[in-house]
Structures are given as structure tokens and as C-alpha cells.
Image (tube, rainbow, N blue to C red; front, side, top):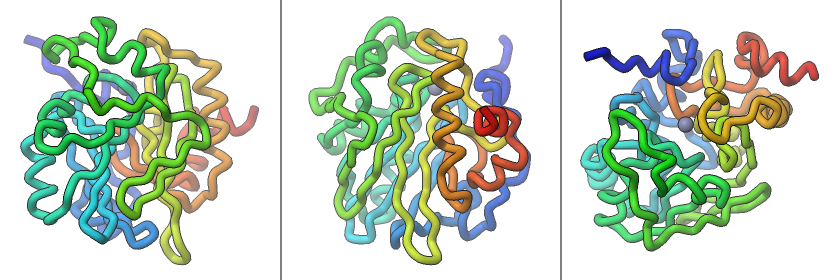
Length: 251
Ligand SMILES: [Zn+2]
């Protein structure tokens, strides 16, 4: 049987080394400290999807993109003594949402997603190898994310940037920073270290992706980027090495 290589599936050409220092890269076991919040990355499933646990410092946690491996995500929550407060979805592809049923069985919390992706991601249109049949829409689904939305979970406040292109309802979540601690952008499958998400899936759109990238290129350069696959990076670094972001920014 052919093996699945996430770097091929997701068109990711990322550097082997994360440019962030250990203390700032959740994939190296460090944490990103943004506004006093800790962030933990857990790489899940066959597609090596990055699920992020964002701790608010007061016992509440938001999970961004619980892709698979729910037992590991739940164990990390338990180890931290943190309570799940919300699930945030950058988009609806199964490799970002497959852990939803088990996560919600443990804690019935709101699941936030944009309506444009909720419209298809709980239907047969979201069925692909190696995943089993599609998920039923959660009872706590809130398909209300839109440009400028604020998502609150405990003390956490995420600002929503609508960034269609990889999928029609793709969004990025921006966690504001504080002096000495740059903001963190959960970029889903829109922006990767050295690359971007595919636009040839159902609902993908090259022109929309270019416009979304142009917006991300205008973020403060020190913004930390926490992608849906691969290592963390920064806007400044991507503006040096990412041909897709450079091309979009130059338009
Ligand atoms: Zn995706």
C-alpha cells in the first residue's frame, strides 16, 4: 500500500528546522507566550495535522483544529489541569476535525467554524482516505465565524480573519500579543512555513487565496505563525522565503 506523505498531500515545502527558538516553538516542546497565554502543539493523525491547545492561564483552554488522536489531546488537557472551553476550526477538512466527537463527548463546548465550511464539512463532500465516514454536525456547532468576529474562551480573545482560498470558509485566528510577546496567528491551511495550502480541492480558489495571503503579508512582521501542518514561523520570515506570500504581497 502506498504511504501517505503529508508534505506531498498538502504541497508543503517547509524547512526542516523551525526558525523559532525552542522556547517559542510549540512543536519543539516550548510554548508561545502571547498575552500571558501558553500554547501547546500536538501533531495528530496520518496527515500530521497540528492541533493547538491554547491555555488562558486561569484553567480554561481553547482547542484549535482537533484533527485526530483525541485521547492525546484529552490527556494533555488533563495533565495541564485545564478545562476545555471551546473548539475553534480554521476550516472543515476532516484532518482538522476528526477528533471532534471524542472531544465533545468529554466536554460539550461550542464548536466555532465559518458557515461556508459548515455547509459541506459534515456531508459526503468531506469524505477522503484514510478517514472513515463523515461526521455528524455537533449539537454545539456555531457556524458563525466571519471577518472581524471575536471568539472568547475563558480569558482568551481570538480575532477572526476570513481567509478563503484553501476552502471557502477558511479563517485564521489572531491571538493578540503584548509588549515583548508578539501576536500568534493560527493560520490553518492558508499559510505554512515556506508554502501555502492547496487550492485544488473542492471549493478551493486561487484568486481568493492570493487576496487572503496579501492580507496576512500586511500583519506585523513579528507575528508568530502557527500553521495547520509543519513548523511554526513568523510573517517576517515568510516575507523573506515564501514565494507565494511574496508574490501575493507584490500584487
Ligand atoms: Zn485543509
